[in-house]
Image 1 (cartoon, rainbow, N blue to C red):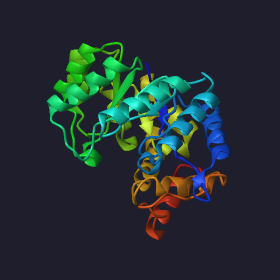
Image 2: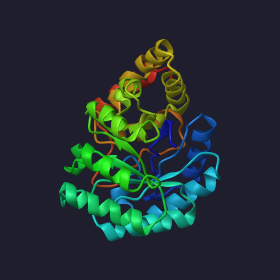
Image 3: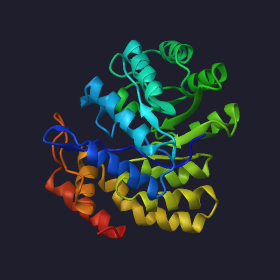
Length: 293
């Protein structure tokens, strides 16, 4: 269902508020540059610092601006099941094609709790879900057996996973149990080459915010089995992939976008702050290596 380069969109701010004009422009640019789908209100979109009204507004703007040209996978996760349900209901109403559902964070549910959480959501809202496993942030790991059980219970609604666990063996475990139609999407730009080789279908990407065409070309080559071209593009992008995490994300990617595009401000919301001088130096080097500056 979902494949290729899928940017986890930044949320542009101006004077402390969402810059709706810049966000609409970003959506159009990403589609024109070859992105395969769009993710508003994820980690890179600073969802934890958005009000509910802001989150719902951004999802609506993204769906409206995309206008069916590419799918919109709206960030709807929460550590409160009822809040996640509300986000999903609104996302469906405003035109999102699917929901990106992070594992509940902080309260650390068991695998039984995760099964109950995601099953409840699937039973309440007819909106496809892409599970989002990022235990480094959530301290909760959606284990393969839980993913497999959910996808078997709700094959039309639990349609894929964004995996940022770093454990490549899960690709094969998921694939053997669920087949190739279950979308396995990499959550780490610097692992996307290996991930696709193991059966992945794409990447929900930070780097694609600033390098959408290169990321789309890399994904196209990788998914077509053109290893030589994919490796060349991966090596062109690799220093930038790593530089974008030399400080708390999304500060480095917003710096990079301001540097390359100019119309995205560097502003992030507290408790995040602008990236350090060392991070800016690394990002500049990554942008230069990729040929973006």
